[in-house]
Length: 322
Image (cartoon, rainbow, N blue to C red; front, side):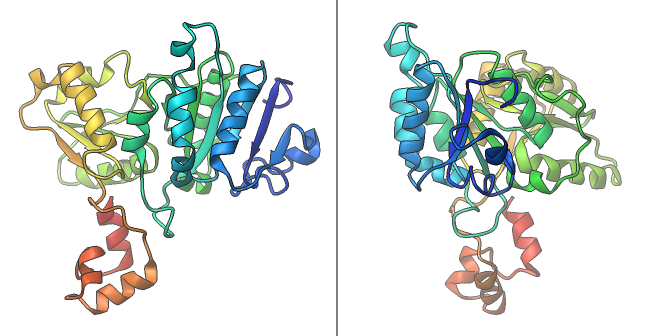
């Protein structure tokens, strides 16, 4: 992207010298210079504001927010300024800012929550893209640079640990916006998910086949907009059942998806049972392995209640929170 688009520049916390916290930009500052790839201070609101200003002046900035949880500090500017710019100026101004972030590994005080429900309901007017792996993410960046819409791309932290087939056409392949992908055919139930939890659904699908349950898996890929072709409706019409899985709190992004599928796509006409959402717990508590161990050894304590009661192992809690 930096080679093909001289108007692109990338900046954020640790984006420059070390190539972001997960080394997705490793070596790019040395190759393209400190003006194209640069570090900023710890100030998310300024990073977003800087990106809006640069985008309005014809550049194509990619503003890095280190983790999804920190996006909250720039949410007001995204909501009031970026999302409404075209509307407020009657289409006369644009700011095709790309905001890049990463989230959800269920570890650490600030990295185990999911503010997705709040995000998608506060920044209408900005694409919210949730690729399940890095190839899909790269495709989204290529797509966005072909247009003028602002977007938030949320890469999943666990995705950095995956081995993927190396594309041969970097900078060319695209991921469509607003289009779901059916990644497993099934006949018994439609399961919709995205990001990190999607891979858990894929693992569970193999286990369910052992007891004769054949699930169809749909990757949302894009939350704003969601499924413009109504492919989820076609799946529900076949399976007659629906489960939505994500790691937000109950009533968050899963409720949004339920509204999109049941009410807007009228999928209720094909359901043989009520639709179900499987989410994280209703408290957005920070995950802490040491506290988890204390809770396990004291099943009657408040800690045990917060972290899921008497559990067999830390792994069980990680799984059950999903």
